[in-house]
Image 1 (tube, rainbow, N blue to C red):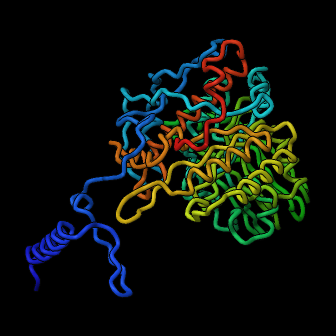
Image 2: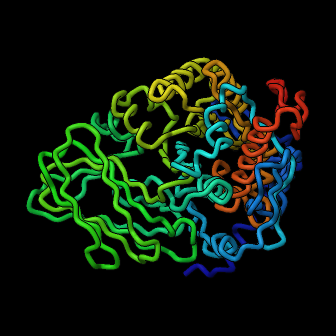
Image 3: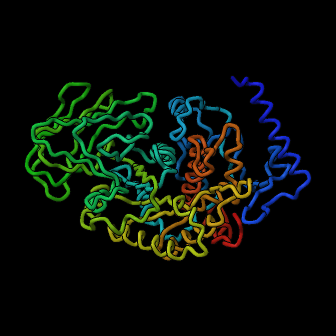
Length: 508
């Protein structure tokens, strides 16, 4: 039996041999016959990090983005104070949605870096959304923001922070749109479960029906006339705003005939409705007391029925609906059924669509991303065809690192993709926010990963939960600053020259 100390001695011997080689031979690739060897540098063997991350807007350890509480629109400069609200402090105890690290704690002394990376927009680009907010539309009806993104936004990441701030300012309760079938990563404050009779498909599956009709991220369907299927939501009282919804809307269609839909509050039947046959898109809403701990929908005698999605909401206010599409580059909107999308955008009163994609495009490392710019342009134009007055905001790709010869560095495609996204935004009349620049530019993900606690995951592509809140704070601050610019153009907090399109030749 080999003893542990002998294994340790062997590993140390191997390390010393490699260290000696690195002293006597220049580092780098060596071609010997048909074999290529890589000789590491002494620094890399000793653990020194030779990649220099950009330090502009460096995220600080133990810092979090502040939430805006009770700030008023009548100021020409939006200020986001550090929260003292106990409800929000509790919400910061959420675990990381990718790593499931349960050790994250709320720090009352932390704040986000203050420097604003402005949203680049014309009045027309965000005018419809900002006008709805300025005119108080959220006080009398709903204003909807659909936040589509790749795995960077899974589990309500980024969306939840933006929703919390906007609902605190403009009103509204509840997380908004959810699929009928529970996802791996669920929004904080809500635990969803469902019966086994549902068939769920998402937009990335080779399913023609979901690619035409799954505009809210996926479809749930059932075919059993004899079964009773349920969808259950258990509230988490620690997250008050998400849990205080008082209405549930069900978006359904393609049902064979009438079916019974029941609403249960804490196990007791609270309401019953007969859903009539609907071959296209229909909706039904239930009102429910906000103090219900468990809310359940039961469908009986259904036959075939499609559930496009559910909305946990209140009658008025603003909603930021999180629609994550892991593995997607965002090229989905041109494939949707136009009439269904038009109806759904109208029912929801969608005023802003946020697109946050790009990570799944980066590994290709192409010379040109003109093709991607053109495809993204077509997606924005498709969205605008669903509802001509809708505003669109493209969030640029975040930093992402690869390992080259033992060193971590930004993918060479990142800035090309960022520039393609910006060009697509300007061509299509959308707004653009440079997430890469907000992080700090080239190699900034290294700084985020090495922060204490970490703001970036060890895959050097995704934010941790805490990091997602930092970037969400930056985005939210920029969006509210842009709203101030729209509302008070003569007293803009940022000079005009500061919001001009940055020179794409600059790294960050």
